[in-house]
Every structure is written in C-alpha cells, then in structure tokens.
Amino acid sequence: MSERICHFSGMFFPADPKQLATEVEAYLHAAALAAPAGMAAPRAIVAPHAGYLYSGRFAGLSFGAVTWTPERIVIVSPSHRYWFHGIAFPSQQVFSTPLGPLTIDRAACDGLAQAGLAHEEDAAHDNEHGIETQLPFIRSLWPGARIVPLVCGEVPAEQVAAAIDALEAPGTLVVLSSDLSHFLTQAEAREKDAETAHLLETGQADRLTPYHACGAKGLQGWLMSRSGQGCKALRLGIGDSAEASGDRSRVVGYGAWAFYPIDAAMLPPRAQAALLDLARGAITARLTPDQAQPPAPERAATPLQTQAASFVTLTLNGDLRGCIGTIRAHRALAEDVADNAISAAFRDPRFAPVTAGLLPDLRIKIAVLSKAQPLHFRNEQEALAQVAPGLDGLILSSGGHRGVFLPAVWDSLPEPRAFLEALKLKAGLPRHSWAKDTSLQRFRVESFGEADLAA
Image (cartoon, rainbow, N blue to C red; front, side):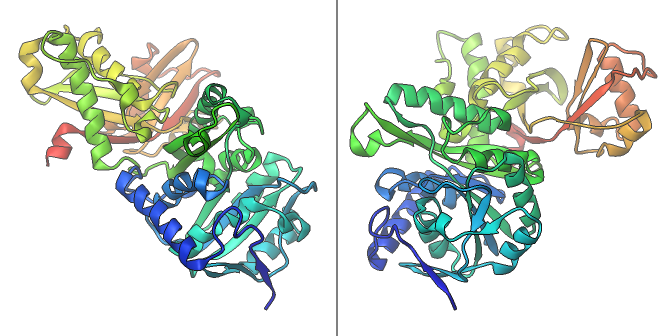
C-alpha cells in the first residue's frame, strides 16, 4: 500500500505524536469551552493552515464545531509553492500523520478524474502545507474517515464548485483550508478581513479574491456549489498572527467559519437567549434611559457578529404588537436584532409606540433569515409548484412593489395560492395580478422566542 508522509510535521505542527496529540486536544478543548458552535451539523468548515502556534486555536474552533462523525472528508487547499493547471490529488492510498494513517478515497479521486474535474499530480502535494495542517485534527477526531485531498492550482472557481458537487453525499464534510489577508499592518488586516467575512457570510463568491484569502478558489467553489448556495454561515472566530508574535506591522489573518444547511438551527440556546436579551434590552433602554443601560451589540459573542438578516416580532397577550426586520444581511446579527427590536416597538406604522407599562407583558420572537434564493418559473402555476408550504418565506417584487411574508404566515394561510394572493395585497398589488416582471425569492428562518426558551 503506497503511503504519503507529512512533510511539514516538525515545522507547522509537532512531529512527536504525544506532543501533537496534546496540542490538538488543547485546541479542541478550548473550542468546547468557548462553545460557539451551533446545535446542527455543519456541512463545511473554513479552517486556517498556518503553524499551530499562530492558527491552531482557530482550527480548533472550526473542527470543534463539527458535532457529527463524517465518513469522508474533502479537503480543498490552495497551492502555495507549485504552479499548475486544475485540481490535483496524490497517487498514494494512505496519508501518514504523526497520529496515525488516514485512508485516501481512491474511488472518489478516480471519479473526479473520469469527470475531467481533477487529476493525479504528486508534485502539487509534495510541498503543500494547506492539506497537511488539517490532517492531525481529522486523525484525532475521526480516524476512520476517508479523505479526498485536493490542491487547487490555476483553475476556474466553477470547476472547484463542480468537483464539490460531484463529491456531495451524506456523510461528507468539506474542509476549506485558507488563511485570510497576508502581510498587512494589523489595522489594515482587520479592515480587509472584515470585508472577507462580509463576502463569505453573504455568499458573494464573485467578489472574493486571493487578496481576501489565499484559499479564495476553494471558498468561491464552495459558495457556488449546490450545497454552498443552500447553506448559511456562522462566524466562529477571527484574528491574526499578532496575537502570538506581537508584531502588528506585518500580520496574517485567520478565521473560522461553519456552514449549516438552510433549515438547521445553527444558534445554540445561549446564543438565542443573548439575542432575545439584546432585543428586550434595546426596548427597555429606550423607554427607561435613566434606569437601563442600552445594550452593546458590538460586544456580543463572535457568532452573533455574523452578518445576517433578522425580523423581530412583538406580541401582547397573544396579539401582534409590532414586527419589523431586514431581508438582506448587511450588518452583524446582534446589531440587526437590537435595531429591529427598537423599530418593531416604536416605528411600526400599524401600532402606537410601546409604552413602559406594556413591557412586562410584551413577548419577543426573533427570526434569523437565510440568504434569499430566486425562484425560476414561466408562470404563476410553476411558481406555486416550487413553494414549500410551512417552510418558505417569500419576497415578491413586481412593478416597483415589494412584499415579504415570513414562514409564520403559513399558520394562518396554509394554502399556497391564498398565501401568494395575500402577499400580493401586502405588496400593494391586486390579488389576481401577475405581471411579466414578477419575481419571487424564497428563504428559510431560524425562529425562537422568549416563550420557547422558558419552556
């Protein structure tokens, strides 16, 4: 059985098995204490690939977010030192790490070659640390998993997406190996890395470049793949090399993300509780400024700094008392929730502003939206056939009019045609209208309220 050894053990991570196991365990333990991961099973993670002294804690956050046992792990890395065209896998059957061997999925590699999506080229792997730095975490957590190590050379992002799609299957995890900005001052790096986080979290694959992340091709490929387009991102950690080196004049940025299925409840209960506290705190501080400090969304935990859109709904004795939100992510989730809570309480034109006397009986519910995806249809009937009752929120646009329904509206309008007709009325259109420029986008929500957490 042919075997490939780790060339970078002893350089990027310890060669001694005991020391390496201790370090990996420490990074994973620190991630568990931070507990930033969601309750659901991520389908992909972004993990950095620098020396463990610099980026090990971020890799720990990424791998620690995976709460299930993958059968196969696809690792997508850039090529740092070897120039070639396409995507390359190695010829060997086993990748040997200081912690033990990992089996390379030869059938998967051969399938990519037969499809013209990747090829065998050992030279692309001979001097590449982007794959090897991920392996000790994988071997420590899932020693029985098969791996598909892929290095990207000069290759279109569409081809990377096609390769990911070809490998998509239950039990497969995608590891996107990438650092962020390189060799900027710390202030410049933080600005650039914040831009990268925005592009990742809002799915803007076309704007990602190697100046944002050295693994840009893999990140683009994931976001363009079928799985990636239907996923939502959660930020787990972001930082830079200055935290270890002390040198702020020339830093490398690192980040950790997990990507969850569109219907997954990615926020754990304590994150949900924190958002509900932010919402109530924002309303309370507006009503009683002398007694309550306004909340500080910018100091919320890292996952709540993920850029995402939200709606905040207020009820009083079971009746709607305000509902305001955003449909496109453009700021941190914590900030979005706090501002939408104030808007729902004081700016919803359907209701008088909330008063302090109502606060004790006011109940808050939050819906965190996935990215909206367009529906493709030729007529209204085809549009209705694509809508999933009870699950889809809809955004309707036509002739300068727009209306939005959250999935909760299905509770009162369970029939698709009635749902759509009511949405037209909300948009200011006739119930039976259907213009050529009518467009529909659908989204899903992760919804939770104070009553849910109390229960």
